[in-house]
Image (tube, rainbow, N blue to C red; front, side, top):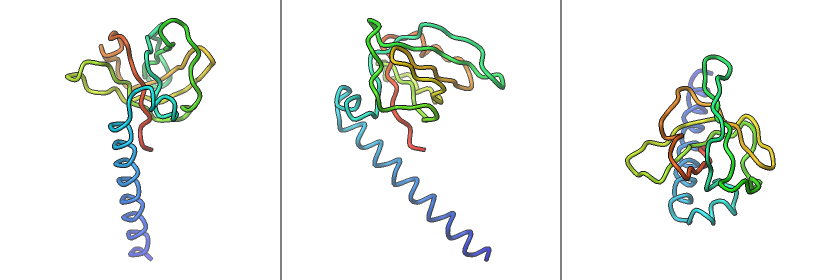
Length: 127
């Protein structure tokens, strides 16, 4: 029984790695607007508020620059990377907690100065 369980875990890990590689390739090969149209990204975001969240986490309320509507695609519970235009900055891993037509709320473990950059982009993270 333990061998079967171990084999199933290995197969799930392989499947997750393949899914992550496919999503990364798709994000890299498509332009920003095409990724947004496919529901993989939200582009041209700015932080309009930062607050404390549950369990010592930070939360950020974001909106499209110019108060444009948030496109459909990413939803509550999705894991995302917050990315800026500076290639030297590492993406900030976050979780979407709320989506409204005009804003999106994310939570993350620690505050990062990447949130001060403009414009920001949210990319779907393989889960």
